[in-house]
Length: 122
Image 1 (cartoon, helix red, strand yellow):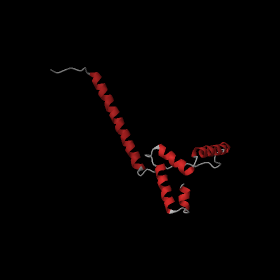
Image 2 (cartoon, helix red, strand yellow; image 1 turned 180 degrees about the vertical axis):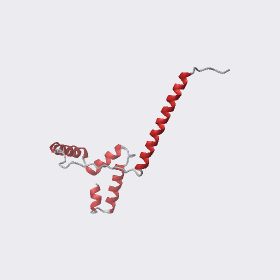
Image 3 (cartoon, one colour; image 1 turned 120 degrees about the horizontal axis):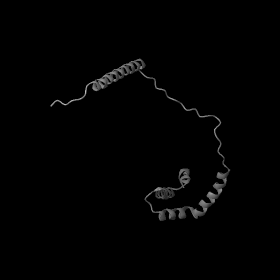
Image 4 (cartoon, one colour; image 1 turned 30 degrees about the vertical axis):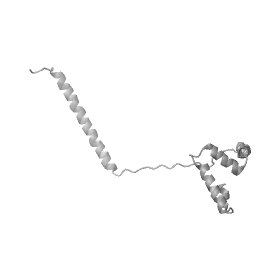
């Protein structure tokens, strides 16, 4: 139907009818009964034609074989270059020093707690 519209060999009235029928066939809100009626009136016994096409294409589908591509697909990899590598390394070193200092201070605090017993002052 669309091919006959594109062909341009139809009269104005026929073009209008076909475009209206195509619109109703493509519509999601149109009832199925109306769509069947349009198909039967324009194409005749469309169910038989569809079954014939299905038989015809099922033979060709069974013959088709898929093979892998001979050339390997290369996947690209994006590597983002860091803007301030030297500053990040120095920040890591200072962070490491801070964590070492805190570990040493907590070890001393733990040692101090064990030297004298805890007492409440009331």
